[in-house]
Amino acid sequence: MVRSHFTKQTDYNVMEHTSTHRVYLCGGPRCSARGSVALQQQLDFAVWEQELDTAVEIILSGCQDRCDQGPNMTVWPGPYRYIGLTRPAITRIVAQHLRDGTPVESLLAATPQNPELENKEQRSENA
Image (cartoon, rainbow, N blue to C red; front, side, top):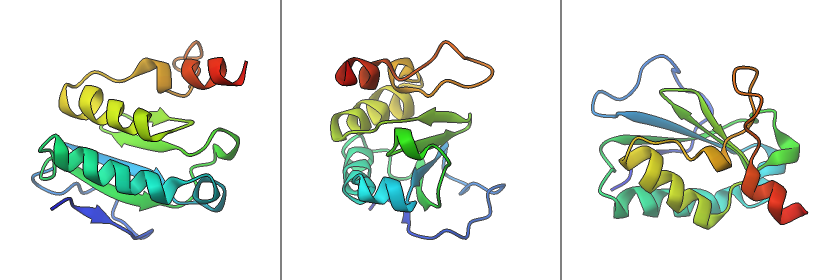
């Protein structure tokens, strides 16, 4: 069974003792309107399918302030901020990042530390 938490009140400093990753899927109003609830189901399934259910803690968070790029997700340790999520993107993030330990750079948001990163897959879809 996947450890999913549908709460906005979380102790952000304490990870479950068996978890290696904590995933915050945005549950803000704009991301919810863009399908984050269906993505949460996909995330649960992908984590279970990869047998990571004891290693990944999933939390439905409040707004992550990237509304124009949603649905969004943040993975800790990190933070790794994924934007413009789709069902295939969720499956890929679980397999490549959460299982294999390699972030999916093409889906990451640009940050001050990595300004060259800009969700390349979403940008090519919008072109």
